[in-house]
Length: 245
Image 1 (cartoon, rainbow, N blue to C red):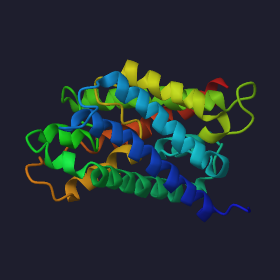
Image 2: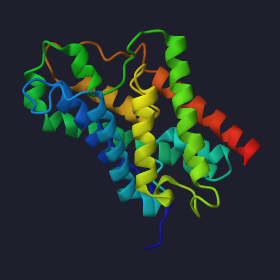
Image 3: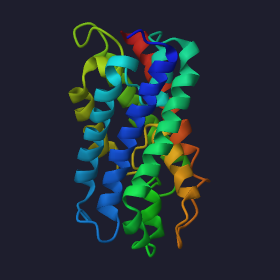
Image 4: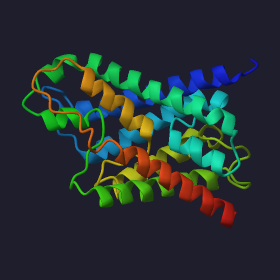
C-alpha cells in the first residue's frame, strides 16, 4: 500500500485512540465505584499505560511511525528526522484520536461514572491529568523533565545500533512500553505524567462535554501545563540530541 500523508494521519488517529481508550480506561477501572479493579493503585496504572502505548504502537508503527504524541512529532521535526509539513496534520490526528479514545472510555464505563458522582475529582482524573500539589511553575518543570527524558530516549533508540529507522513503531513496542512504565513509576507522582498534549487536551474536552451530574469543572486553568510542558521538553531533548549524537 502506498502511504499518503492522509493514510499516515489515519493510523496516528487510530493508534492514539486505542492508546487513550486503554490508558484512560485503566484510570477509570481503578477509580470508579463498583469497578472490579477499584483501588488497584498506581503500579497498575503505570503498567497499563505502558501496555496502552505498546498497543497504539503496534497499530500505527508500520504505517505512520506511531508518534501518538504531538511532542514526539515536534521533537522528531526539530531533530531533522521528520518533515515539518506533516507536523500539524499529525498533531491534529493525534488530538482527535485522544478525544474519541476518551469518549469511548466514558461510553464503556458510563454506569460506573453515574455511580461515582460523589467523587468529582476522581472522575476528572480518569480523563486528564491534574497535579498532586498545584504549583504551576513546578508542574510545568515536572512535565518538561519527564518529556525531555521520553524524547531523548526515543531519539537515542532511533540511532544506529539501537534501531535502523525513526519512529516509535520502528524501535518496537516493547522498549517503549518499558520507557512509559519507568517514567510513570519514577516521575509520574507529581502531575500524573501527561508527557503528551493529545493524552490530556482531547480527554479534557470530553469531560467538559459529558452530561454527568455532580461533576466538577474541567480544570481549564491547568490545561495549558500538559501542553506547554511536553512541547518544551521535546524541544530541549531535540536540541540535546543534535548536540550530542
